[in-house]
Image 1: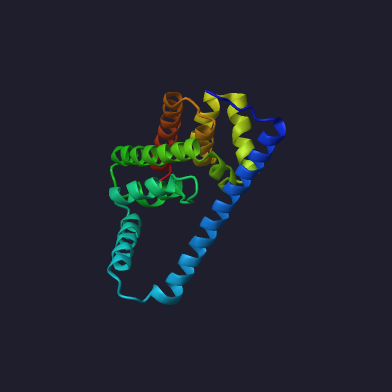
Image 2: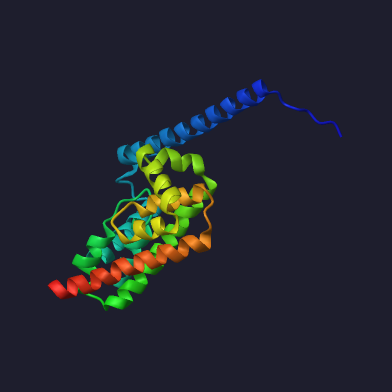
Length: 207
């Protein structure tokens, strides 16, 4: 079987071509998304199309459940708000909306389930789409999280999940570096549990 050894120049040129191709694909996807959104608002927003109506009904239902402070709403807010590219103030919602309307430890269980799913998605995206994650997360936050991980390890994961730090983004970065999943989930769940148990007793004490 004949083999061919690439020279350094050929490997370098191949790497450049690969990066350019990935860049073109990413830019094309962004442009396509913008065009589709523009077409929707220009021509399709008021069209009585069953798919749009169905999607709109789902979105309204989700926001309704979140605003009413139900356990289902809590699940939705953590499921979507736990994603590293979505911003939802889950701790604030926990204290101001959900905690006064639900059993605290039922709420805690729902929060941990929703966050476990969304953080699993974060890890998977980082694992399979490392280059995309590096583009979506600002460089300073990416290297801040990476530095904390290199310096503190398991303690860093725990602290990121206890304190109001970008733990969602850290999870995607852990996926990029193929961090041990069992170790990650142990300290992620421990940190989130400690945080929300503290909030339960803090809100109970002050209110």
